[in-house]
Image 1: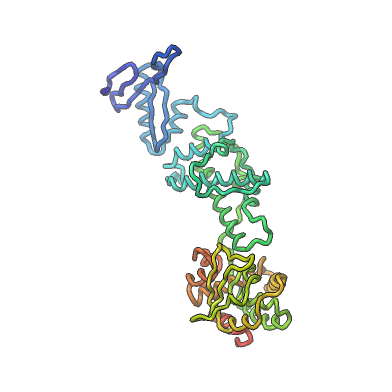
Image 2: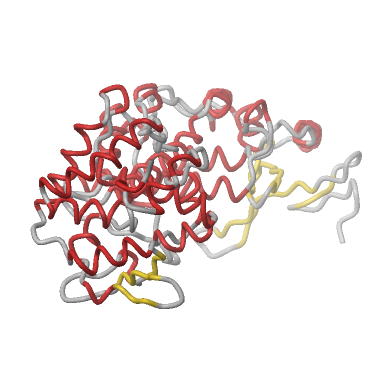
Length: 422
């Protein structure tokens, strides 16, 4: 075993810190094993290894290696920074645009210091940033080529090289805009649930991808010699801001809609059927159109079972049971299903006409479902509201559907027919 200060033809340890220096082995054209003249110092941090060339002179190599080791003993100094400081030839050329892989490697090497205010970034967060960037690159590429986007969720051993080998100067304002467009459903009549989910997902993906180009990250890339081009357009393009988008209508507006439904029943019965199914059963548009009388079941409480039938399949592929008021049950038995799908469009226009401009909504029919969700959460709790609304996660219900601020004075409009409410 080589002792501190002991020299062999290819390896020795420094006298102060006991750092191992070595000469690299190679085989010449005659097949003879030889060692390079230059000494090297190898250092591994967080699974990444860097080899520092130290020159031919043993004494100078020993001094330089211990200086590098001391430099790296400071937590804020990374391998990349050390390579730039002690091996300037490795610095990026001024005209070289880094690839995504170079950015990712540099970010990973500095996880201990690259977060906000120099804080640590966890390995799981970094993995999310990398995955989000990969998704953005693939989705924009598919959109620009007119191809469907293929999800890689659940795949193992994914080859990132074709995507991460590209230079980062493709990150422009248009790139961010194309990604936003590519993230939305192609169908203009897509359910508002799907539209909201797509926007939230796009915002999350964009936010995580941009984390790789935070102020702290850009400062670090500059410090280690990566010539990052101007990506301000990509960073400044606004996202969808798709967070809590359900704002409860003013109580007087809700009451006016409920009271106007009395006249709606007389003026256009089929539109009233649609109103009954959305406002008082919480059905989505497609579910209201698909409703059949056999969905109604008189159990321990009056129930409406959302079930598959014909070409209709409930969202997420499974049905659900919705507890409805007895008067709603009896009225649906009497009136039957919606006769004309256009009645849902008429219902949307009718409701929008009753909502003041300052509280205008784009899809008033879905607003009825959200008002029903608030009623359910208020009377039966958020879990019951989520289950009966068909949401997999109660957080979706509490964040986007159920507003606990629904006044108690409005509850009778669901408990009994509007004409019976004082």
